[in-house]
Each structure stands twice: as structure tokens, then as C-alpha cells.
Image (cartoon, rainbow, N blue to C red; front, side, top):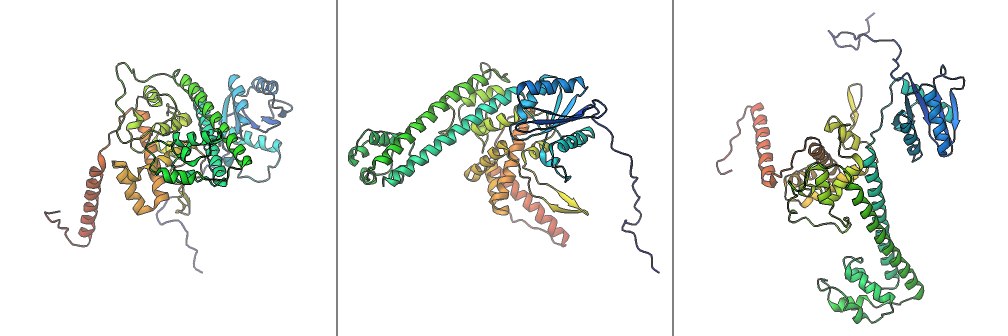
Length: 460
């Protein structure tokens, strides 16, 4: 009878396997199952006769929970990032000197059968005690304040845009085709005409005379677009949407004031008196949704980098990333870990020596979205990054090229923040020459393998 061949390669050495149990990494650990109306906390059974307890969500209950953990000798606590319910728990536990691990719920759900809160907190305790949970990145309190204000401003800008869309919908219902002759309804011409309509003006030629001189449409086209039915109920809805839009605009101004006030309290990396910021680069237009203060100068003072000089990125993109990740990236030892946190690198899932999946992880991260949006603006950029993006877009397609360039911008952001380097654009011609040299080397190598010789004409 033939003996069954071993699957181990010939000459290989069998590795020794340590069959001992897992070592305790966090002996003074606790697990908390966070909820909207109650929190369940589990500690080691040898520390208390009742190791699993229920606490409420009021501030007094959270302080009682923190004091109980400290009395029982707990030093490290693990809890899941459930909605926004974890935020007050994290704040109070840190105030009592406890180390808090905020873990991803996807990392703790692989074992089935834990359907109750009591079992869930005990499972978190076991995983955290053996060091099987990774702590999520949390910026400093100063960055959290900036993040809250910047997110609130983004919500207000989105609500103002929705009010503009509803205004346009009401005008179309009245057969006022103003959007066909004006590129932006929220501009000076559009808001002036809408204000006159709400004040009772109905003559299309008088309304057409209110447009700015730079409008490309002719007065006849504007007048024809302003003939409608003027229904009373639609005019009422239009007046309310205009009022809401103005309210949102005033709240955005208030938010800008608060954001500027907070940014002025952050430390400076450069002295604007000795190292003033340079002139604004030509060809870069400012966004209409930009803050009402000089955000570019403030970010230059805080980071020492003029973000307006970087191709593909602008001040708003830099502010979004800084509000999410901060200006101290010491929590990420390498740029690979930073891009992995952003979800901009592939996942190499392997089994049996084969790669099963290389797609990027689905990560809900505003900084990652900002980098992706910045990558799309490189399509017509006459720069080194723009030439690289167009080359990748031709070879890989738009979705993969956007992800690749978003990672490129993230690495660039990491190097600028981490090492304080200044960005220098080498231009499209440099990239094209470099790419040509790379292709020539590749062709020469392939020709050598085939026993041929690559000859380059002198005219080339």
C-alpha cells in the first residue's frame, strides 16, 4: 500500500506550536456594553461578588459606575463605539483616570450566541483582558472641538443647499425657468430677482433688468423665463424657503466666528511676523462655501504649510482632514498605517497562500471622503499629480484611479505634517519624461530576455 504523501514541502521544518493559553495583557480590565438607556459593566469575578452590574445613563449613574470601577482596582476599560452614547461614558471614565479602549463593533461580533447585554459585556472583558482588541484613534480635545464646529458648519451648508433646491422646485412649479438662464440661483442676480418677486413685482422686463452685467443670457431670454402663473400658495412656500436660507446663512456666519475664535487658541508652528504666508497661487478659485475669515493663514500658522500651494488640495480639504485627524500624527508610526485608518489601502485577505480579496475596506471617514473629492479635481490639473492621475485613470478606470490618488494625497499630507517638508510641484513635463524613461527601461529588459536589442532613434 502506498503511503500518503505529506502536504509539507520537502526539506521543510515543522514549526513548534505553543499550546499554552493566551497570556493576560490587561489584568485590571473591564468591559462595558453601551446602550441608550442603560450600560452593563463586567469585571473579573474575583474582584466583586457581583461582577456584572447595570448602570443608568444619567451623569450621576456614570460617576457611580466610574467610582465602582476605581474601587475594584480596574485600570483599563473596553467598550464599543455605539452611536453617540459612548461619548459621555468616555469623558467621565477619563476624568476618573481610567484607560478607555474604544473598539470597533465589527472586531467583536465574530462569535455567535451572545444576544444579551450581560453576555456582551463579559465577552468584551475577556477579549480585552487577553489583548485582542485594538483601540480606536481619538484626537486631542482641542481637535475634537474643531471637529464639532466644522461638522456643524458642514451640516448648515448642506441645509442651505437644500433650501436653494426647494426654492428652484417652487419656481419651476410656477413655470419660472430662472435656473435655465442663471447658473447659480443663490447668486446676486438670482436672490435679487427672487426678493423683488416676493415684494410684488411681476413685470418680467423690470425683473430682467435686475441681473448683473456678467450674466451671459440676454435680457430677452431672462424676461421670457420670468413669465409664470404666480400662484399664491407657491409664493408663500417660496418666501418661507428664502427665509430659511437666510437663517442658515446667518448661522454659518456665527459658526465661522466660533471656529475662528477656537483656531486662534491653537499653538503656532510659524511666526507670521518673520515667516509671512506667500501670495495666493494663480488659477485657484476660492469656494463659495469657504469661511468668512482667512482660514488659509490660520492653517499656515498652525501647521506651517500653505495648503493652497498643493495641487489637488485646497484649504477646505486640509481643514476637513485636520479636524478629523489633528495636526499630531504620532499615533500613526508610518504613512501605511495612516492610509489604512482612512480605508484607502487594499485588504490582502489570504487563504491557502492565495489572495482572496484586495478591495479597500468600507470605512465611514470624512477625511477619506475629502481626499477622494480632492483626487477628482486633478483631472484637468497641469501638474505632476494631475498627469499621474490621468495616466492611472486611463489604465485602471476612474474609481480605482480616484482611490489610488486619494491615497497619494493622504501620504503627501502625512509627510508634510510629520516631517514639515514643503511641497514642490515638478510639473507635467517632468512626469511625462520620467514615465517615458520607465517605459524604455521596461522595453529594454523585455528585449534582452528575448535575445534582442532595443534601438532608440536619435530623433526620439
